[in-house]
Image (cartoon, rainbow, N blue to C red):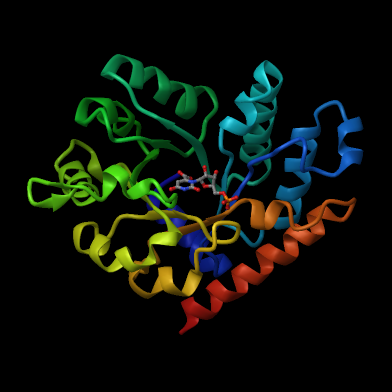
Length: 271
Ligand SMILES: O=C(O)c1cc(=O)[nH]c(=O)n1[C@@H]1O[C@H](COP(=O)(O)O)[C@@H](O)[C@H]1O
């Protein structure tokens, strides 16, 4: 998908919502455990009920890898279902990869070619040659961790290096990399007070913003400085949406939660 196609979707749906498909067999409605593939059945129902309200889905691969080969199959069925039925939706493999160059190329092939996701999350710790292989894929995006939502996010990202905070250094250095227009950045919703500063470094790149909902982040605070003329934000909620209910009406409950967030986004976009 191109950046323009993503922006068109955002404008059409009046939404910059991303729904996290972080499926935990202990949390899904019990009746689904009777299905041959409970994870896929859960995702399918969530997707069918929410696709008109969201512009992106983000399965975190940990929730699939935890179930071994079966989990990976469920991930493959989920991305295939999305690509076949809702190709307009942006897809994010939240895998947080990154390694020496030739290994990163293989990670990129796994998520961009084999599974055909639009994007993958990557950690910047190993530097330029660990990220650049991901950036060579046309119309695919690499979403690099900048300032994460968790408490420990500042342990390293907040340290001063070369007179700058490490996350600032990550942002400015990454802009010098080849194909840096294929980058997006993760900035946690729980770090809303940093968005003004972050936009000084990356005024136009998309930011993936997790941490609204279960982690307590607030949409309005994020939008105050995070929004660009092209919106430039994908705000993710996982548990707050997909576990809104845990009975046979779970998909409707998820739809209600997604609708609430979409309406809030629409209000902000129309201001
Ligand atoms: O890369 C991410 O998506 C991510 C980065 C970050 O800083 N914080 C963060 O919570 N995430 C992911 O975003 C999702 C948040 O889930 P909820 O807290 O349930 O909405 C999980 O899949 C996390 O792994």
